[in-house]
Image (cartoon, rainbow, N blue to C red):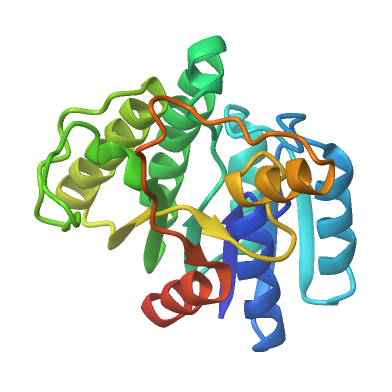
Length: 232
């Protein structure tokens, strides 16, 4: 099949694209190559994907509607997987505008284009952060997710709502994933696992946020990719 994936220079997008290419599919990857974390890691991921003849990268921002339309038109995808986003809960306190342009305007562009080209399946990356103030543990898909506690989560919940309306109004087959903290090779250096290891290797104290009573669910990248592939 032919896949159009946003965020292929990112952690999850890279692993998904590589798995699909190994399985014999064609992939067009769309990525803005932003500097949210070390850009060298993104270039290394792109270089690894470039070893596959069936991979073609496109560098542009999600807000660039014309570039996005041209990239999708050239890919003629059976499946679109929208993974690109401005990530980071804490960074959304410092630069909320980046989340508006990428997570809202960029995602709306994806929805419009998916509708226009009549894609067979649109898949979207949401986040566990949207559960926010929900007190029920463990989280379930049926739990309330209308009280996000961060601006990042609010933009992701908004994306889900926009996607739901497009699926209803325009009959775009759509699946949204609420990813929990993902870890594994080629991971983001700002994530807890890598930060903890780095501070331990440097014999530095680990920075704890809040009262130190938080707990997290972690998902290994290969398990997440397997789920996306099976549902695509």
